[in-house]
Length: 313
Image (cartoon, rainbow, N blue to C red):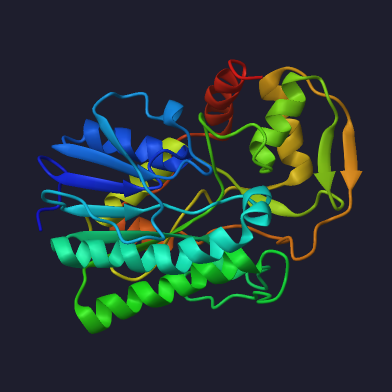
């Protein structure tokens, strides 16, 4: 399969979501002949599909996926992706990670397409190793409040591997670390829209725990670039795509305050159960195998993100 999207037919499951919509646009800009977003809009929005060339199929991917015509690439980004979403959509999260992933694989197999699975840094749970390399097997609570997402994604990696090894389906797996940028939902429960919304409204920043837990934030353009590079590569094992610059929540709150030019004081709340204490990707594999690393600085990415949120707050 040529290592290019030029003239190819692309399907993006979860294509009306935050990451999915940016990926659809990137595929078009790289010359794809067609891009079809498949989404049930449970967490996505038609408003994210600003380019009229992006097709939209309203469909629950937990049901078999039937698409007419050729398909060369299937990107599976379909899943709730924030604690707020997978708390209220707990059964849907489990189903989309299992049945949805199998249906994505069946579509790719039927079309002779290559399939990329969007996995997650949550694979690593609350890690005892930092930074987290792809070889780290994780520290995950299978019966905790985050288990519906964590275990759905772990199962997703298992079935992708099985289809690759047993049925010969061409597959790729990306482990996505915290990503931010325009089109995030203001109320989705993740720290970037939460802090940005609070800053723009002059409210206090809600920090869970003592604020020393860390995250690593990758701007959406960099994340999508890594995802596309992985899809077009010959790397079938999981690859971390994220920014290795690690910040505490207190440091991140101050970064948002500076970028937004406002915000209140720090307000502390109890740390949720199983909330990871550290997130820092080891991106050696991405650098050496894909020639990828993030390029957008936090200051630049926050400026673009805040400019978007000013239009929706």
